[in-house]
Length: 129
Image 1 (cartoon, rainbow, N blue to C red):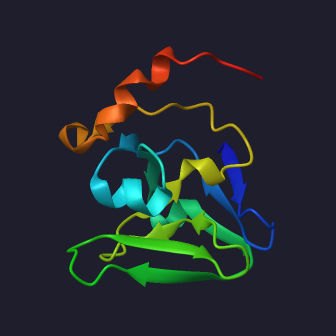
Image 2: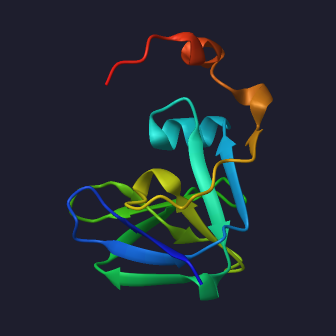
């Protein structure tokens, strides 16, 4: 089974996930935008059996007023990391934390009506290496 690895910014936390992802979406909800400080979050999901921590520990924050919103992050550098859903039925993998190419791409935009109005022009910006 193919796998993909990921880690935090400082490298103290790392994980491995079995592919393929169950879902892979760009989420434009206001909570994901605020948690990521970006136009959207790119998140994949896998079953818990397909996910393994390799090293380190994360801190989890569950937004009390939300039915199912949480973030997990490295206690040293603060970068977001994967976390189990509250039900424990899935693991949400922020794909920006991947170190290796999963060979997959997001399949849809979700909460599109909540998107940042300025984000529509991003595809037309000049590209610089």
